[in-house]
Length: 93
Image 1 (cartoon, rainbow, N blue to C red):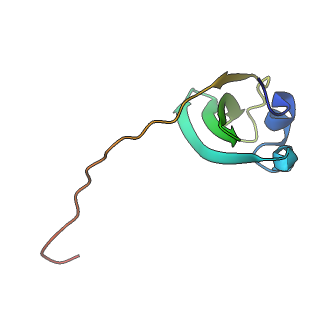
Image 2 (image 1 turned 45 degrees about the vertical axis):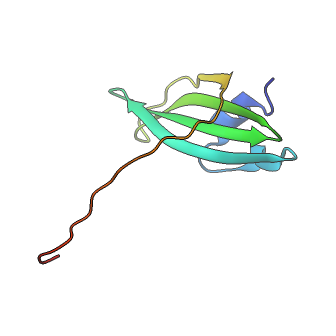
């Protein structure tokens, strides 16, 4: 079940968050998932109650790339991942 207007998301993003006026909808993740020669590809995940929906869309990488908006929406499920990172322990910064 889509919980917002996908076309409005593409047309307004990233300059406007008006589509989040849908009650109980919260953005939980927004990341770049790839690039093409002309576009940057994004994925944004929203939560409403216990439902999670992801939308993948592309946007021109510069003001000169004006591609036809296209988005794919699908339901997702959150899961936890353990990540180990390393930091410098001695020596100059």
